[in-house]
Length: 585
Image (cartoon, rainbow, N blue to C red):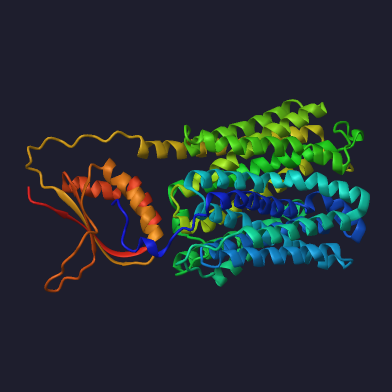
């Protein structure tokens, strides 16, 4: 189960030279920051859009919702393209679409064209997972892990960078001036990608599941509609409930399509792996809480004094409240890779969730002073930064290199849906706390929303701790000595014959995990793909032989959670004949 399998050289990673790696890293960071900041441009401009285009606030809200929708749909599609040989072309083509969309938001066109431009800008949100794939393929392992962690953080704190800048431009030059910022930085990102992003490793293939993409788009449209149109829940509850059921049915249909398809949009079987499923559940619930607190603080800061609370900040000054969020989020992102050498990834997720929960507690208990809001936002940023930086390591630990973009893209879809639901839940709680004839909710409604978010972070913490406990039981459990049977117990043998190897990288990932599982189970590898002379009806195929002290021990190791991780990494990378046989006692 160790060593280099034959044909490993067919699919090569293309590590860049050390001198070339230096410009690659800032290029990846810049592109991820740009697409995150541009995707969030709709948030501070909703009121300005409603005024400038003479539309309702609900319609103006779609300048944000449509970007989230297109990003959520584009993310898994781009993730699948990123697993293939045309990753560089996919990155450049996507940035061209984003630049074109940015131009539509600047030109003096009707509101419908603005929505089209925002949808095109949202497509860029799917690029972060591809940036991670580039880092994992072309940087040394330790450096690549640190860069991936920072990319995850940058994709979150980008909102904190774009918000105040867009708000400032909107105050002095109007909506078009604010959107011109998006056009400038996306054009710069396109030029950066063209000059810096290398080609993907050779020997990969990727096909896009069109049917799966269409069904997923329909399901996410309903989810985001339900999250964005809060009046549906308050005035037309039956309709909202029906749409929620329809969204659930579509998601189930999409899952069936992905399980049955030969080229699924997302490897659902890999997503079912306990480590990946647990991480995505933590991301979903944690995302609800994190975005809930972010929206609560910014909305509270802009509430006028006449409501009996709040600070009446302008859009730009309220945007400055996000500065500690971004700064401390980046600090946490830099610290997390170093902590991962001493603390397991799931424990870092749990610790970060506790920090975010602390932000909720602080906001619930003390928000009468602006400094307290800055402090709560800083605590939130530090927790979100640590959580975002630790998440890729938890998922990629059981993911082959070739599936990096696909695995992380699914995690980003989960995060986007969680963020949208967090925003919707916050809006519903505040709406319920708004008395008849009043424009603003009672101050106590913010406390209720904070406590709800604190509950979400408790669930996230517990989920992460369960994930950590499971991983600890697999990796830290001492290997028991085989019983002394006097040599009379028949030994057990794994016999693997590899007929075809379609994905050497998946096989390499399997080898790494399987070696640990075999060692934990007390196995000894005797044959590892050496020379074969075939006679009679035999075929000269790669053969692996592993010995265990008993047949039962061989079977138990095959069924162990550690070896199941190895099988998940192998997936469809080979066709082989695997059997367990009993030796002579």
